Every structure is written in structure tokens, then in C-alpha cells.
Amino acid sequence: MQVLENKLSVRRCLTFVTGLVECLCFAGVVFGWASLVFVLKEDGYFSSLCFNTTGVNDTQKLDCSAQDEQFSLIFTITSFINNFFALPNGFLFDHFGTTVARLLAILNKLLRLFLIFFSFPSALSFLLFLALPLLAIGGILFLITNMQIGNLFDSRRSTIINLYNGAFDSSSALFLIIKLLHESGVSLRTSFLFLSACSVVHILRTFFLLPRTFIPHPLPDRYAYGYKTEIMTDFHCLFLSEKTFRECLLSRFFVGHLLWLSVMQLRHFLFIGTLNPMLLRLTDGDSSLVSQYTNAFAFTQLCAVLCAPWNGLIMDRHRGKPRAAGETVHEADLRASVLSLFLTALQCVLFSLCASIPSLPLQYLTFILQVLNRSFLYGGIAAFISVAFPSCHFGKLYGLGTSLAALFCLLQYPCFALVNGALGGDPLYVNISLTLLSLLPFVHPLSVYLHCRKLASLRDKRETTAFSS
Image 1 (cartoon, rainbow, N blue to C red):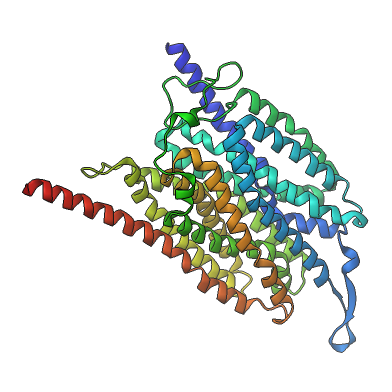
Image 2 (image 1 turned 90 degrees about the vertical axis):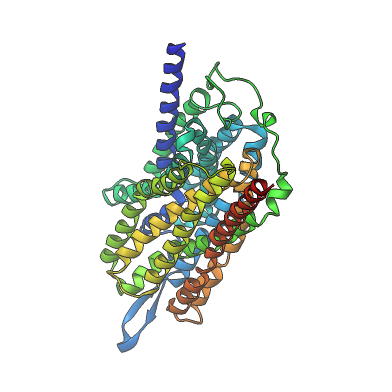
């Protein structure tokens, strides 16, 4: 019996570590767009859209605003697809299980790398409109199938979910590595060919370190999974949820969470998508300075994996506190989430304020606040859904929430067009508007807090009535 327990413990630790590496290296690479777009410009993608203009004193200046607009459109489409396809990905995961979802993600990865591989020379730049969105679809599937690993470690469940989301964010540093290799003479094609070969690792994890269906919560005693060991029970049938999917969808928690996510995500996507032209404006077109700040931004993204666990630790620490008399586990989980939701909203306001100030050195602080807030944000999405709603609806609610938020984030492209057009390249008024909009997410933690107070008040009344009688 002890030997079996040791084997299960080793397998769970190996599953956790390899899942972290997978999320860190492959899942969220599209958020390293600022580094990739620098390489794409160097390789001449959409270079035909640049043309010489005559400035003051008859000086010649290269105008690449049309090129920047194409890259902005690609990132808008990619970030939209990244979130919108979380909905079919969530339904796919809930219905078919882990193995089918991951095999689809691996196939998707190979296809997108194939498209990027053949998108050069610049005459085939349009293939990026297919390749980058596909890059996002597969990445979110890897994240969804790995977040369930938190169920293997119940007391640290929220911490692990946040850690994987932080690793998902930090994987954007992969494009920084590609950028540095490119500057050392390694071609973009060679880098993506190597990434294609790494698919072998995904296949091995799928069949040996993950279940065919799902990791249940709560976890049964001596639960085994993987090749020839998985308990072949559909655990989703074991849990009769109190709420239907429709009831969860129409609840104020889901609506509030959707508002909380949509506004903050729009702020982040617009910042990432416009980082390169913003740096060009603040540095007066100095390419060496732009490269320096782009590298700094990419390095801070790597720190997301260090920032994200703090959000989970906040939730798990409050969950571990003694519960009040009559308080359920579900109520305790909701109460523990309030501080996390509030801190995430507060970070977004501070990040947006810094991003609105046109000071180049201040952008270092902006980068730090951005990665801290984004790591709290994406970990908080999954962590809150996992504690507020039945586990059998996790994939669908997570997917639907991120998909609806993606529709809202389509506003980033008209915002970019407004800055480039009517505002003459100055994003100040758009940044101020977004900062004011960033106050709306505070509604969600306030709503959850008031709900918890109401439940506590009802318990007190019941106890008082019982004592009086």
C-alpha cells in the first residue's frame, strides 16, 4: 500500500512540474507579440506598406503607419481568437476529456508553425493572419487541460491554478528568446522548426502523465491516472450540481466576473498591441532604444510565473482559516476570493495610470505593474470560477467567459485607429478614458462581499431565532 502511495505521489509531482514547463514554454506565446513584431519588421513583413514622406525642412522620413496598422490588426484578431475559442475549447474539454483536447492542440500547433515557416518572404505575409490565431487556439487548450492538475493538490488548488496561468503569461518570453537568437543570426524558420519538434513532449505527457478524461474534485482515495492506470469512470456523473449551466450563466457572479475580466483584458490587449508604436513615438524612432525597452518588457513577462502564485496563496490562506459556525465550504471560498478580486482591480487602475503618462523611463514601472496585474487577472478568472460554480461546468463557464470578453476586446482596433487618425498618434485621451473605465471592475468584488455579508447576517438571525426559541 505504501509503495502505491509513493508511486502516486511521484507521478503527481512529475505531472505538476511537466505541466508547469509546458505552460511556461508553449501555451501563451502569442502575448510575446511585442518581441515577435520586432523580428517580423526586421525580416520585411508588410514592408511594402512603408513609404518615404517629406517632413519639415524637406527631410525624408519613412512612414510605416500602414505597416503598424496591419500588425495591430493581426494582434487584434489573434487576441480575439485566443479568448473567443476558449468557448468551443471548454465544451470540447468538458465533453470529450483531456486526451482528445490535447491531441487537437498538438495538431493545431504543428499546423500553425507550418504556416509561419512558409510565410516568408514578405509576399506571403498574409499567412500570419492564419498562423497567429491558430497559435492562440492551441495554447488555450494546453492551459485548460493543465489547470485541472490543481485538483491533485486540494489545499493548494488555487495557488496551482494561478501558477499555471502565470506560466501561461510568462511563455510570452519565448518570442524574446527567438528575437535574441534572430539578432545572433538564427533565422525565424529555424526557431519554429525546433518548436515543431518539441511536440513529442506534448504527446508523451498526454498519454503517460494525464488522465484520458478528467481529474475529479474532490479527489478519490488512491486516485490513479495515466497509461493503463486510470480509473475509467466518468467522474462528471458522480457529482450532482445544485445549479444548472443556465443558472450559473445568468447568475450575478458570472455577469460580474465577465465585466471584471472584459474591462481589464481590453486594457492589457490595447497596451500590448500598441507597445511598439508607442515606444517608437517616445524614443523618436530610435530603434536601439525601442529594442532595449522591448527586451525589458519581454523580461518582465517572464516574471509572471513568480507573481501569479501570490494571488492563489491569498485565496488558499483565507480558505484555510477556521469557518464561522454554520458557514459552508462554498461560502468560505467566496469570502476568500474577495480580496483577490479587489487587489486585481486596484492593480489595473495603477497600471493604466502609469501607461497614460508619456514618460519613457516610467514605462519600466508600467511593465512591472502590467505583468503583476495580468498574472493576477488570468489566474483569478479560473480560480474564481472553480470556487463559485460546480466543477462539471468549469470548462464551459471558463470558455464562455473568455469568449464573451473577447468580443468586448475587439474595441482595441477602433481605439488604435482613433489614435492613428483623429488623435494624430497621441493616445493620451484614449488612455484617460480606459483608466476611468478601469474603475468598473470594482463592482465585482463589492458584489461578492455584499453577498457574503448577507449570508453571514442570515446565519446570525437563524442562530438568534434558535436561541430565543
